[in-house]
Length: 117
Length: 110
Image (tube, rainbow over all chains, first blue to last red; front, top):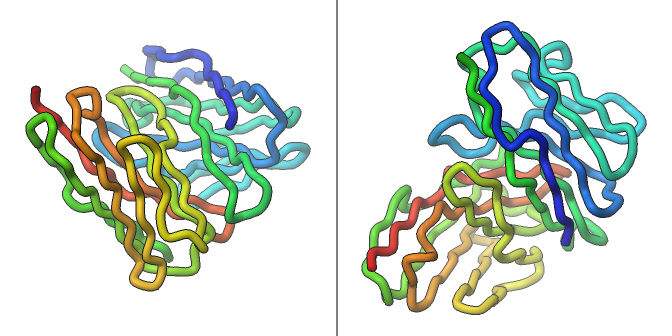
């Protein structure tokens, strides 16, 4: 298993500002993911954070709005840029832990609850 | 594209009842299926992982089954307790992505 921490746990931000969310894992992992969960909804994958290269973004998400860093195998950041009230969500990072596709188990951080006024 | 559906969307039961949550998926070419629990405003806690070659997994009062050919999984909770109240999500993994269902919100009444 993997233990994941996120900072901050919650924040209230003003429209037009940016927030950087940190994700720290207690072991080295190859794959890290960033999700968004809007109120009352299921999870939507924003991007896969790749170590040493640019993140891979899902349809509807762009690097200018959600820049991601992955400087090493235990840490990643997600920035929510030029925020609007529609960005109010829980942001979750997750990692894949296991040996091979069948054994890969996903573990999640506690989430960052973002409210944009 | 893989689609994952969970039924029912919400469930309210009295304490002590046995219950079944359902998850269905459209593409049977999966590596594994995972069940999660999410408490309000929190992250997801992994409950059970079923590999594609397995039929079921058990952990305590939880039992998850997988029928890959029919695209179905069930999560069985025995002797439910108020502490089981949460949203339960299933996710299937294939082609380096996880696809999530919309969840079943469970309320166990004392």
